[in-house]
Figure (tube, protein in one colour):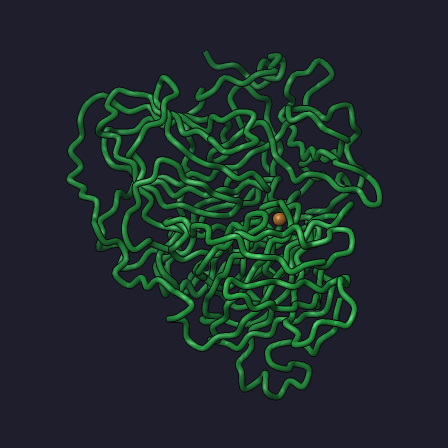
Length: 578
Ligand SMILES: [Cu+2]
């Protein structure tokens, strides 16, 4: 029996039935080459779960998540992202000291400054090699009635990108409204593999949300950005958002009925801050071993399939995954999150049809013959840069840009001076040149230039670092003893020392645009800044961290131009310690 909306609103819902609703597949747009595609951002009412009242969201083309845009490699696409959003801000925000992890505002009043936000939006196509003017510069957001025009050359390897809002200072909130969708690039190398396609290729856009409750404790459907404040002095610091409800393609805990055959899942972690470790469980909760094969990472196909029983995805990371359901005919499998800090591990359920299907698909032994694994030794001539991630006492996490200096200052320790011992025993002295988005731009990169960035996390908190424009590879990950970093002073009392190599996981050895940098780790990434140029950002993809300032600018220009720019010296703005 179908309830009317009126009756639904009267049903008292404090708990939602798991796996009740079918997975929704966003419609696919396949624009013709050089088509001017218009995507309209607008306010919509959707049902995140059939037992819930309607939820007001902001959408691309009326859909949460937005339509999947599918293009061929090298076929240029121009998009008019038209802001037609109306009405009040659809996310209620509260900050609560030691907030509960469950639904509801814990008695706090919605923050008036968030309620007053206008629909100020800018679209970034994550992972796209496009010009700085098309990339969705955070401050170039537009108000209703206006459009952002962006051109995407799509001249890059077949992969799953995603588009989402990137507005300055409010990305965490704007993405939470529903402004996200998937973008697939196809190419001949991928075609040749004859991977499962059509209804057997399924995007899984996974995110967590929280919902408000009424005075009786019933879920209202209202989106809620509830943050737990850790302390308020000297400044207010809250944990990034996590929510009790896990959504796949905009539905809380859905199910998907599948044929007993191979499927391809394009998995995306579209959460603000939650890290997921995905695994399949059987009806008894036991891990299903050997069913998942990862074939691609953020930037495209891996060289060969990887048999993985669990796949970790930080925010914005993607995994291209094949599952053969043939051995599970008539069974129910559950996709779960086995990662830490998960109040509710269930993600979605697969209901495998009973009768056998012979799909004729054979898993190829080689996926991407064009793939070359980068090492420091086979990198072309390149620039070295250093970042240090910190968590100072009483402050938000920060991302510092550093320059190497030949002589340590006469007095150590000192604020902004970080000494790092390398595995070969040499000690580098790094000086901070920026710590916040608003500091002067320091990173000037030659167009087509190769760079290696060393990202040293001197804090205990993991950050997924995303660089716009490029696909890079993680060269190495080293454990570090970071007790020499004085988080009151903001510098090292003794050099940080290596504790030995940690794995770059096999599924992190492909092309990436986000890399997890765990606490006490030095991760080195390398890539070529090619295909487009201009002004871009790189940032932590924990969206609350990005909004708090863990985002910085870099500029890519032709080297002939850089030569005539008297304010750039050796790829840097002349040194201004921050
Ligand atoms: Cu972060």
